[in-house]
Length: 149
Image (tube, rainbow, N blue to C red; front, side, top):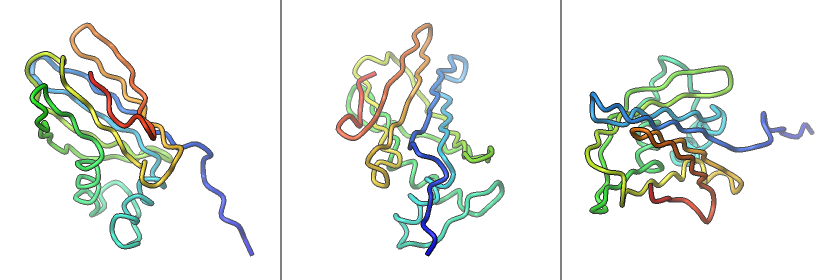
């Protein structure tokens, strides 16, 4: 019997959040291993099989998943709505693009990033935030799923 070998030994996503002052919004790109994203979508949809490719019909499933796992709340603890821009393939990864309208200071804002944590206990989501002249990096993992920005 053949044993299943994962395509990679670590479970990590990398997110870039860059503030665009002209549009008053964060431009967000999330890089996720494609096989991990497919597994997460399958688990959240009764084991339905997902194959992520450019120009597939899975955008609504990816958007729904990201809306649950990546949440920015403002200083009044209200979820900040975002626009799902789309996704694109790159070798073994999928890039997911979002735009989050944002005004005001980051003080009191909180970011939740639990992407893939329900699938992998060792999942780490690294998030780089650039706001005006400030740059910060946050690590999200089991036990530390949200950070004050």
